[in-house]
Image (tube, rainbow, N blue to C red; front, side):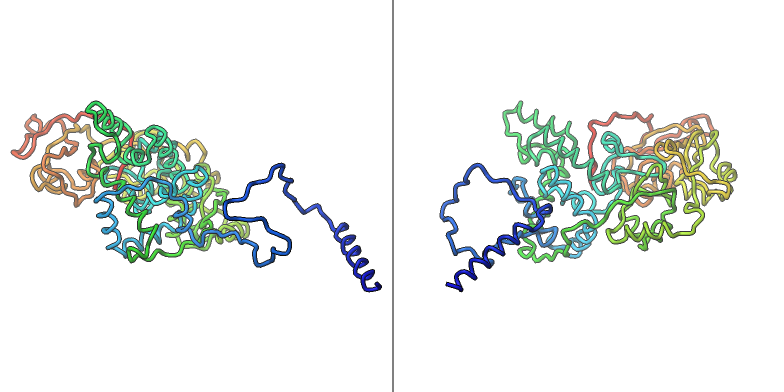
Length: 490
């Protein structure tokens, strides 16, 4: 009897103690008004059957690849082209390794954005196809960045392109724009394969191809449309990467481990700052800094145009601490200057105390060009320059150039085996000029019959326009409006 009374007293004491415990930090779920029916094959937990061994642990993805696989939601495309591209990628393990290692800085952010928008996570692999995950990539058609935006398309999605930065290369801005564009295309076509085709070829072209098939009574799926080979291969390339990421061992591929947590974080840029200074304050290399901040294609960061920078997660606090304790009087050796009138490059360089060659290199000015009035250029910051560059100039400054002579824009047809050098020699021009006018490298070759842009004096010494060779004929250039706003491809 005494033992029973002791046990009862002990239980009452324990209950009394529990009642006195603080409860302000305990959030209990509200009682459910309904009883959820059990799934087939399950039975209620009876008295005495529960134990600590039965508590389920939340299983988070081990790495980012697993998280991507769980979000696959795009219809499978079965075709010989998919098999061909899958085998092609799988046969190049070094290439896969370089691409995937480069992607490790950006993938978490992209996957996070896709999940937030409830979009298929296969789309996180699209930069593998576009740029091999190189945010500095520039195509021969002037598409730029990790998502390869053409200039006009970038502007339509609010990606700034001025004398001091190019948001088509910005990791966060370009990802936002690319996903906005993909969502819009999916809304137009209601099919991810067609949306991707439009991303590559342009929505207008895809719409016309669909209309042609409809008039002919033909199916209108991606596989049924008539399209350029580049676009025909586009979705198969993405499906190939999806297959490899989905089952790496099947293709004898080893993917580098990418942790399932953010790689970078955004840090406010308090003032104009040289890229080298920002990297030093963050205690990272300049190359690593540029990999996260590729839109800043000049040696200085203008705080009014780039209010924040991206830094590796652990280095963000280092940057803040070093900046606050830094004794540097100024952190930028460059500033922006507006040309007061149209100037020769040599005259502009002399005004700002630089050599012509250094001034050209800093501002990327090709030979035989004039600087138009109102152009924004980088120049050395003097000891008397205290203020940072204004927001209007940092955000909208443009470099406008014109040929030194009043030259006529013509086009010529490239002959068989013509190169940039051969066309330049035939027309007594510099190779670098022909390359610049046609947006190709100096070592590039032209296809037979390709239209090549040249700027020539309107009349030769005998008062006649330059004559055509047996391989090409000159004619006045006609600017053709672009058929469609589109993203360019590699």
